[in-house]
Amino acid sequence: MRQDDNWRIHARRLAMLTMLCLYGAWAQAYDRLVYPLSVGVDSRYEYDWAVLRMALDKSRAQFGAYSLHQASASMSPARITQELLMPTGHINILVRATAPELERQFQPVRIPVDRGLLGYRVFLVRRDDLARFAAVRTLNDLRQLRAGLGKDWVDVPVLRAAGLPTEEGSAYEGLFSMLEAGRFDYFSRGADEALREYDERRAAHPRLAIEPTLLLHYPLPRYFFLRRDAEGKRLAARIEAGLETMVRDGSLNTLFQHYKGATIAAANLKQRRVLTIPNPTLSPHTPLSRSELWFDPLSGK
Image (cartoon, rainbow, N blue to C red; front, side, top):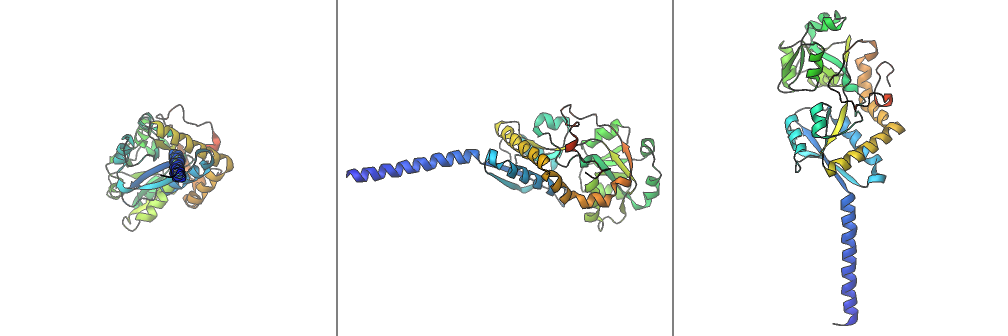
């Protein structure tokens, strides 16, 4: 073989090795996130994944490229948790109202995704019961009525600690039928959830209505959660950096108002009678002192 042929083979090998090294470095910096696909008609999470995408975009200069995908198969809440617990699970991120067990199992990003809006609760009730709720003035009045919540939802111990009776349903969709059938008196929902859920299901459940006078409040942040491993720690640092940028430059509030503003206005939160209860389940690490992270319905900001 001639010397110039040897040189060409060596050059090709060197070029291929360089490409492989560059690809390896790129792949190492390339973050792939997969979030859950929920079961049934459920638009609750559209805003959350929009926030996540923006946080990843805002952190691109520091952390590099990423891809964001939805899981191909729908999952129940219990299945979502199990998938995130498994190192080889089909998802590597979820968003959920925080609870002590979640913060032990997973790595939380302690910036409220929805600015704490979930903790402002509006009630779905039976239309025939609207007069009963209009007469509620105090927490003691509310204690005479029974709330409906999903089985093992994080709200259950919060309401029970405040002496508010609760009935648990095993399936999210079934709770609307349980309310209509009189199994409990009100379905306690986040201020933006109640109106959207009512609009989506009013044809199927014509006896239900939005209660217009009350607003139950307790601090209940929703966080992004990741696995407690090296990848999860890196992704959590990236998402936190992106969210902090969004808080500083106002883009988190802009996105919040885009997705939630019309519903908040329609819920007429400023005119409601506020009943406040504590959340004894919160971690001491909850950033309650950072007012810029939390929505204030009285000011609308």
